[in-house]
Image 1 (cartoon, rainbow, N blue to C red):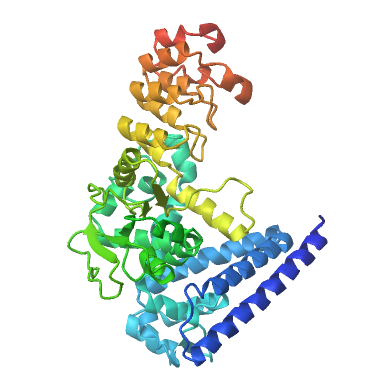
Image 2 (tube, rainbow, N blue to C red):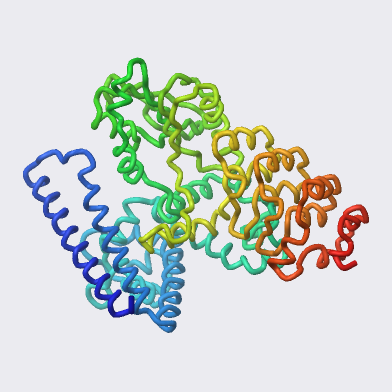
Amino acid sequence: MDTITLLKLYSDDLAAAIERLSDETRTAKEQQDSCQKPPPYACDGAQAAKAAVLSANAKINALVCGPTQFLQHLANQTEILACLRWLGEFQILACIPLVGSVLIEDVANLTNVPETHLSRIIRLTSTAGFLEEPEPGHVSHTPLSASFFFSPSLLDAAMFLSECVAPAALQMTKVTHEFGDSGRFNETAYTLALPVAKPFHTMRSGAPKLNRQWCAYLQYAGGLPNCDDVNSILKQLSWHNIGSMPDTHIVEVNAPSVSTSVTRCLVELHPTLQLTLQLADLGPQSSQDIGSKDLDSQVTISRRTPGARQTATDAAVYILHLPLTSPSSVLSELLVHLEVLRERRGIMLIWTARMLPEPGTLTDPELEATARSRDLALLHTTPLFVASTKGHLEVVKVLLENGASTATANITGVAPLHVAARLGHLEMIKLLLVEGAAIEAVDDNGRSPQVEASRRGHVEVAELLYKKRADIEAASKKKGGRELVPYREYQFVTTRVVGISSAAAGW
């Protein structure tokens, strides 16, 4: 369809979404005025309507926005992000009353910042609905800025975005030049952008503030599913069928709290279900109340350290919230529950983590943008990819037995077989080949697994790939002859590897 036709279509969608949001808001207000208790998931309709408004608006913007508007918007967002960091650093939001306004001069004197600088920042952020200047020289909160005061986690997310994510993102060019598609955890854009000597996940383990900001970023800006999203999806399953079976129960693992748990919602919808709620025990700082005052008697509440042995081994369903820690911690938690899954056939394991969608499968451009942004920020490492990187053979076996794909690649086209070949994991290579890994696959740099083994000096791996009929010319046909020729300067490319196909290599 042409642009005008699409614009009219999206405009109709926007109008319908606004009308739906108006109806949902009016219904919620009527229930509030009459003191009626809203039914479970009553807010689902309003949230869906808001999402529809944002989606239609994003589609319209994409149609009418030209290159100049695109760059102007990018410049505005960059400066607004810097302003949020500035406001957070000097604790400006806490000095503005929630009701009424205050002189900008008084706020500047209280926080010891230049008044003119503060005024300029307020006038920019107000264009995005964050703070406002109701009259010259005064500042007051808006609903948006007040939410950052009431919920410090929102400000944590903004600080992490400005201090870590944005600087690391700007190092993507440099990290490609220096490290290529390295799988090492200390060769990342994060280690280049910030003056640190340790990988990011190692740094987080000893820095409570950094860890808190990271978790907030994932929750609010990184697109991780919140409790409302998870509950809205899980409520659609046929839980009454499970509840009708004798001696069956459901276990929710690593729930962040009682109040936000899936268990609480399931109890409201299906009072006959038998449930176990395992709160994540994160050590001395963990402060969740494990008492069952707020839940019915059919719910058992306990604590469990992520990665520890799963003692509830007779459940019909496990709802697993993966920990927001290092990849190795995620793998450890997966291994624990996949072992239970392997021993007891016929049970269900539900992960609440978001997955990267296939290109073109999302109709909402806002969701697509969030997913792709998270993909770059996290480098899209699947459990199988990480296990191949770390050489966890047993973990890879369990993942493959339970449906993990050997074809899953990261953003540069590097698949698990590439990583295992690069790091010389011979037994891992054998396992991946048996499971159907494509030995002729090439990454975005035109490198096959055989080339990765050759350039790193892993002779046994290179010979194994050759004996398994690795097509050493696959990348040459696809990427214009970029196989062994570019790697003559690598001293680890031995004559045994060169002898495999010296004619094809051009040596």
